[in-house]
Amino acid sequence: MKEKEFVKLEFGTDFDGVLTAENGTVRIGRKEGQLKPYNLLLGALLACLYATFLDIAVKMKLEYSGCELTAEAVKRETVPSTLEHVKIIMTIFDANEEQSERFKRATDLAAKYCSVYQTISHVSEMELEVEFK
Image 1 (tube, rainbow, N blue to C red):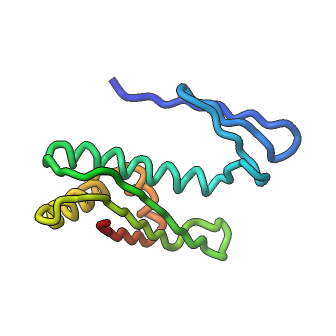
Image 2 (image 1 turned 180 degrees about the vertical axis):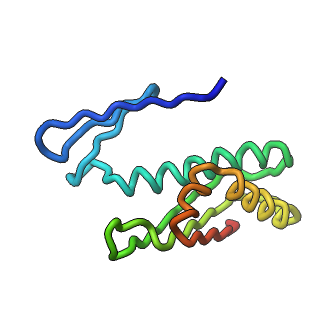
């Protein structure tokens, strides 16, 4: 059976809304404490990439204590202003140094199999950097 996702977004007459999903809510808008559409897109990208990486890392028996991901994106000036370039930095903490090449392989596989990464890569140049701390 195909997996289904559902969200609901409620607005008044301004760009000030609440996005509700099965497990939580997020405030949407331009004010303090709210997320803008591209914040959500980049957040979805990083969440999908890490979820995919995590599945691979477990199968590869990679050991580490945590991971931090950042994404910086540049939008085109033409309309529609799709993403032109996305740079992701994935910082892996307390990784076994002997496994660094395996971590990089896991990251490459995560990018290959992450559906959000692949979707965005159709309109944007993607750059993925792995760091160890």
